[in-house]
Length: 539
Image 1 (cartoon, rainbow, N blue to C red):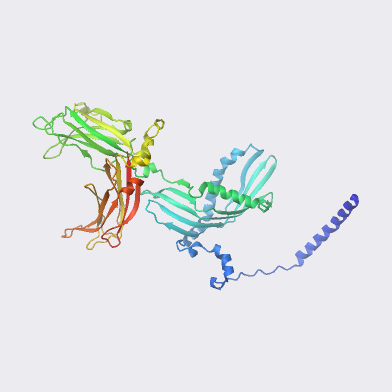
Image 2 (cartoon, helix red, strand yellow):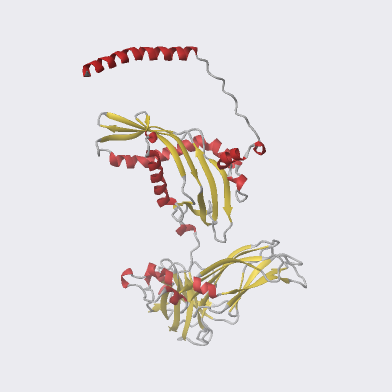
């Protein structure tokens, strides 16, 4: 019976094969293809609700959401640039994957891995809209809606012994909504230091994968499995709050350095100073300053008719880079008429100081910093100073030995007690308008001190971006800082100054949070707004 069924199967295959080929030939020759009709184009208002529901996901976001801007010009730019971008991106992919492929050569019987063909196709990504966020920080944040239904042709060849396995990626589709932040903004081209990219939702990725001529993605269950793996991997890397940081500029060379601590200087005394006056004596005082600072130098009191003065006066200087900054000490002879004569000077690099440790220096005064000058061999006396560098709490780890252990007190308790630095940054103002002139400047008043920004002529939206610092022995709890926006006439007038508005800012939030960055409506101004950033750093 078994041999009979086998015989009948062979007979059936022999008769069925030529009959099938003959029928297929006649159908191919005598059948007429149907004419392809052009699709019917109808306006949206003529479509029924079910049809609208089907096409709704394909409608660009700038149509559905008013927050998104239409960027046809950018899509046209991508279309014209895409052939060149394709080559550049493919070259980057090859150079990046080459060392990765080299790690697998020689393992698992793999002899070689290489691209036989690599192109992203002729269809560029399409941006369906861009949403731009306004922030008070120095950054630019935008969210483009990107859709790419491309026609790439990527063929990867794996040589396993004498067998070649070709893997082809086709019909790639990617729908993503990344958040792109350019920060911080800088006055150096290209005007930002980093590009930070994060995905606000899991992207949609669809593609076909051909291996040995067959689409493996059509295997039941494999497509959904691969989709989940891709989504999880992408989410773990770039889904917000995770991000991809792309450095553009070196912040250490272009960014404005922020204060990291306070240098406590005690000018103790000086000995055997030069006789500068006609009567054989001098009226000495000391000027202290740090290099790289535009702030005016600190000065001691003047000791009349004294070649061995004793001051015992304390000063605080703001330190931004203890590894490179130098304290400059200059001793002058005060004259009632004319310029003051310099009796000598000395430099102390801050990098030789140990944080929190007080160190006394007894230094020989020099004429200038050129030690090879024979005139510097002349005895000019000595000066005695005591120095203590105290870094801010958040910067202490940079300068302290990590093996010393941390402070047991909480950071909040430290912020609410002890000395610190109050930094006030006046960013700018908007819609400030005077009755007679618009030459605005800002005036900061705190604890009897006054700080003033530069005046900007003929504008209602000034941008100052100036920082003022106040060294305090106690945190400014239950205190307010007063800011006036004034206008000053540039020529003589009886109404030379005019108030454009003012604001008082409570500093409790600054002390508790360490920083605020807000825009405040100006009092006595119709629409005026001032942008202020305030920081409190404890030592």
